[in-house]
Length: 452
Image (cartoon, rainbow, N blue to C red; front, side, top):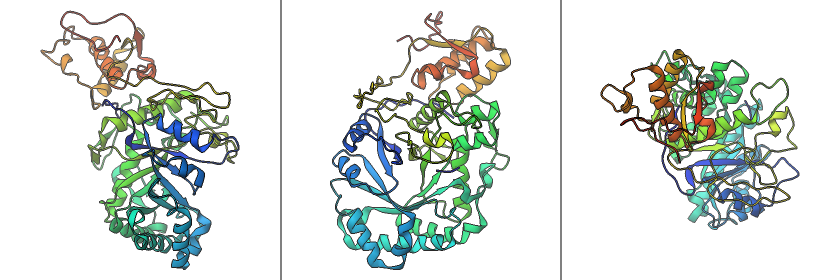
């Protein structure tokens, strides 16, 4: 690992666009079977491994969860040099497990182009080509597997504003050939956008709100004139622009990693449980809305959250060991809105469960007493701009237009967003300009959704 909106749609079970990374740099991980049960209790439908773990792959057999497996960087040169080595790798690491387990993608190497190893980078495409040829030759289920590689945002020389997105000159020549391969084989371009690291480089309150999908003034892309309301969309669209600039705008983007740490060293701004919960839960709500990004509207980007568990043996700053959605006793690190059924904890854990989200939360979200009209106007504009939020009632002639005050209109809009996002307490924050109430604020023919 390296360096919006809240819409609503009801769901049951797994969702095709939500995945999770299963890192194993730890000495206290649950059993593969316990992990498979945990994942099946959530809306997660895909799991990415960083290598090949036979026990984990077998544990997901018959579950309907699709897997990404990885070729280690150290294995790339031999596979690139000899088609027989590629066939051998496939025979040992993929063919024994399919079709019982679903392997959708083989990620050939991790962050190779940014490794600084020119020889390794040069071997990347030949390795991908040899593995692909071996899969086609093997036929049956293997022929449907896609071969790609995972990149960090460092492959972009320019990403702000998104319309200027362009790949780094040092990797452009190799990337052009890799992108041609991906396009020809219908394989995705895999990238790791991390708004957390963007915040680290610019730790201001406005940047934090932009990174956490919280109300903010937005950032206008001077090139496209698009107003971005969150960093995730901005980063993904920068990649989309770079692909288009390279002539491969048709290649699908898959977010191979994104997440937020629950804790960090004293120098790591923003690494808290509250921020992690806000980022991941709001990202999940954004994906569920189906809004997509401004440059790719109407379809959620396939996204693998980082990570399933904390990894206690990872080197580096404390944040590197603190990205887990779950503790290794199977209890939740925080509620990301992913769980659909109760899970039983193991190893002394408490377990955790979340009621299936429904349209409308508990109580109502209204303007707080100390909020200014300026704050409320910004929050109202933000809420009404989000997919799934209908502010027609506070338009002239609407049931809630009177009283025609910023405070009254903002209360209606903020409650609409709170209910649409799932009704979690953190959906009613708005930088502390909103508060939850158990008193129904409806009046006359003006009905505020909620109160369950």
